[in-house]
Image (cartoon, rainbow, N blue to C red; front, side, top):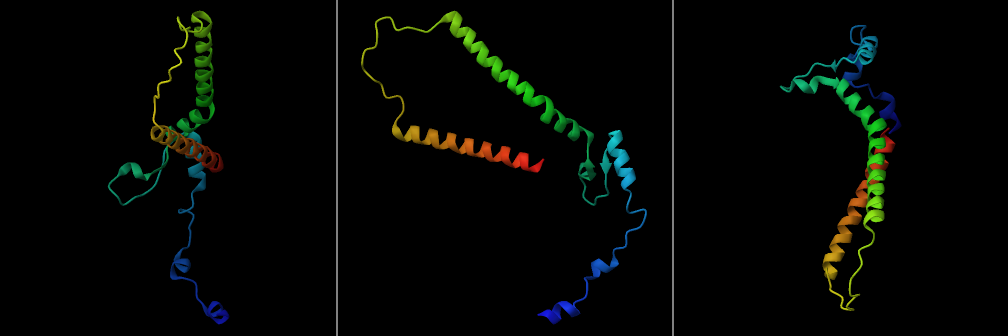
Length: 138
């Protein structure tokens, strides 16, 4: 087994690749990123949009999604809770005129409750995993 590694030759693809100054143009790529231009490549498929490697609109959306959207979402949630609290203070609790009858009505069967909570727990688990993988990617 050791002899196999000693006498093994590199693959032909490894020997034939010799980067030149034209192939490596990092300065042009970095300048295009700063100016907000698209960075496009050469492709052989009919979809012209697939050649765009980095688009300014994607960076703008990512910046909005990371900076302003959480603030907007938090304000919306807190605002809705405040609106519900104001409604409760103005309207008050809804009282039953003649008291409770003592009869209970079954709204949902056991199977319906089980499927509801199974679905809800699946969505909660998926949401937790999505936020965990999103934070690991950044």
